[in-house]
Amino acid sequence: MIITSAAGSALLFLIASVILWDRHLSNGREERERHFIAVHTIASEASWDAQDAPADLAALLDKSAGARSLMRPFPESLIYRPEGASFTLEEPRARLISWLRRDRLIATDRNWPRWETSGLYARKSSDQEVPPSGFE
View (cartoon, rainbow, N blue to C red):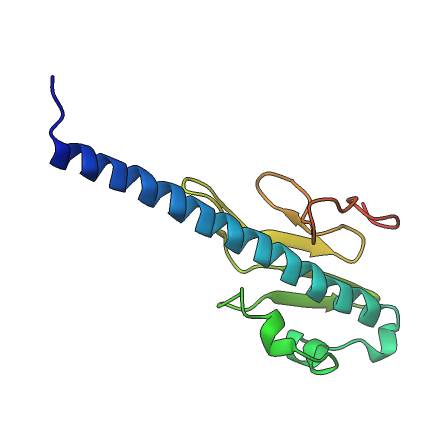
């Protein structure tokens, strides 16, 4: 069976497109991790004072500079639920993280951010030790 040059070119284009799309999704996943960890850090610091803890995500991010850029990777926002001196933070739904997988980030005041389905910890950089001391 001989593959014509047009069919071969189409196949190469398809393979290259899949590889580029998967790399795009991987970059988006890494950006979501970094920004989610930043919001989690802000929420952790705010939860230390239970009386003055923000009531919602907007109030939480009002105290930080660059709130709009922090939320850029989350078009549907994040769900932030303060519960006294503790909180939960999560993405509203699973989104593509690779060509065939969907997942969402979740965290609490005691649990370091992680991917819900896989259970893998989120990282700001590839060499970061996770979870940091004080987190599960």
